[in-house]
Image (cartoon, rainbow, N blue to C red; front, side):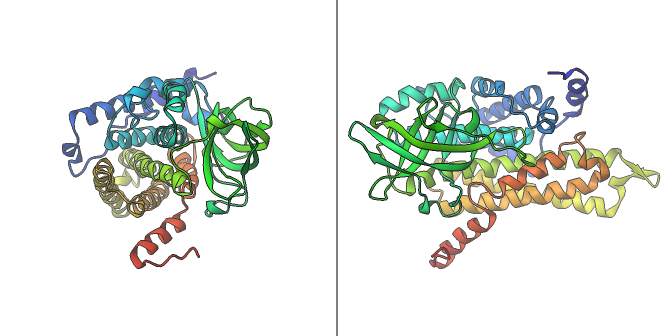
Length: 402
């Protein structure tokens, strides 16, 4: 990779130190601070110098998978007996925050692996499945993906048509999934499909199984450094020991999504903090009318509002993390945080872009890349409007879906 001059310029540019207006670090343990510092250093070393080049070239750096494993970004909340970090949910959130501060696509790679592949295998899988897959997923020796969304069933996953039949000594799987992060490079896929009675189950499908293919999705304007694709099943013979035995029904994949949405609430906060930090620095340095633009009231208004929203979001995810740790966080509470923080990050990215002026659209700054990435994050794992309706149902007791 031809990165010499670009690397030096980028390394100088990543001066990020964090945002903490309300002393929220006081709520964190020494271990939390150490974990955050470790991942922040990792991002500055392994992502920041290269990410603009990767995004411009729509290149997914597969070597990052092993590096994520080494730094403990895969399944940090999974018990250490299975290769995970054995950490609490605030630690997991801080890791996602720092990785997405680097790039949403990089965080997608990590959170899919941890929350949507390792989590269901740990939670719903057999002991043999846990021992077979989890250590390799945690180390980055294996990459996984999660197959729920279909070409015709996104916000309504219960309408899925992917199905499997019991053939005696194996299952026969048919159907297709779409918009699947990691799929083109994944070694395994946790796939959700209906049995002959219409009940939803999770199955572990391995690369190399005949009839299983993973076409890549090209021409994306968003998450360009992340690989996205389809999962296609054409009479795939899946061994019976590959079904997840401990939970079935739509509630199983939705539990996985709760874990992933929690990570997104923290992650998008990282993207917002990066945009704010860049805008503040730029405003102090950019001279117009013989003085820094930071001296103008409208710029100060933008920065003050950014800091306010970031501070509110920090308190929101910290409290949510405590509730997750206690097993008290509800789907609706997680939805509120995901919806709020993604919208907040998008607003901050757009305001930061304006502060940067024309420079804001270039790869010299992270702003436009964050903005484009967040346009995917606001849609995946529950769209902005679907999360609003989840909250509406919680408030009124009346479902708007049916």
